[in-house]
Image (tube, rainbow, N blue to C red):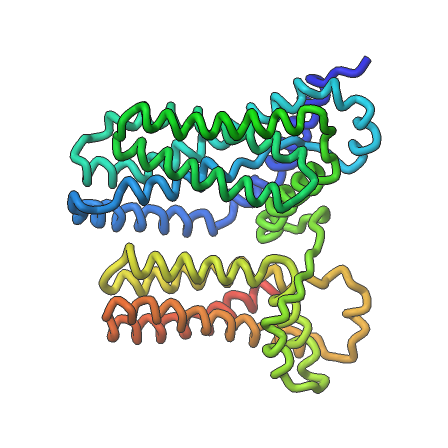
Length: 402
């Protein structure tokens, strides 16, 4: 006899073992030491920055925007797999307890993130309002209820086929959640906060009434679950080989001019291959952009003095270390080995690309320092960044690739 709860426990156990298996490689890496140091330094600068805030700082608006994002983005971990659209389709009506547990698990994961973000933002609220930290627990209780409601709304929206409806729902909930939290953090009248909360309840019951006679969109659920696991596999692939990782290729026409600028001759074969892979394959370009943007924001808002030079080097190391798997991206493709190109040419092409990418990142991070008016420190940071990039590529990565 079919047991939905037993199936859910088995799926949860399988997913936990899969995540735990690769997490050992992630958290054993020396990159964790760098991240701990980075977070510790950022916490020190953050604490010093908070002390400089005055009572006119828009803390309610800042907290409303950030926490509204955390509340609105509500993925539901269903653990469904591709064969389910065939074998579980006939049992859909008996899976209510299965999906309720999935929503509950997703709630506790989301609650952890809420505690984390609220804990980071509360020092700003305490400093600006002078009310201390006694609002933390009431805020957390309200945020928890808001998160649970958003999860149930998100679940009902997944019954719609149209992706435009799902995107519109995300925008609507972000705006309504933002207004609700802004009123909450400004300690507005309870009846006014209740009106906004009623809009969210009305939204849920509207979706519920429109979808209660619809069936689950199994292919959509499977696609979302695959996408989440691929994101985790891409992270784990930075530390060890992940056989289940599927390559994703994105065209990115707006960058076609970069490969076109390279010369077409035999020695540039692997330079073309690695460059096209960096731009279109996996998440290498996205990783580089994210770390560059985060690094630029940290350098502009958090750090000061010669400590900025250290942060430039740290972000270059984080980027370079996570781009090293690009070297093995095509290792299982037999036709690559048929190229009439020497192995040393392949290695030099990879190192050349990595050095250029890190040098460009050094320049962009240095520009963030220039925007603060620290011209001399920016010049030193650029020189240190390029020097570190050279040592990382031609010394450190040389040993790793060998």
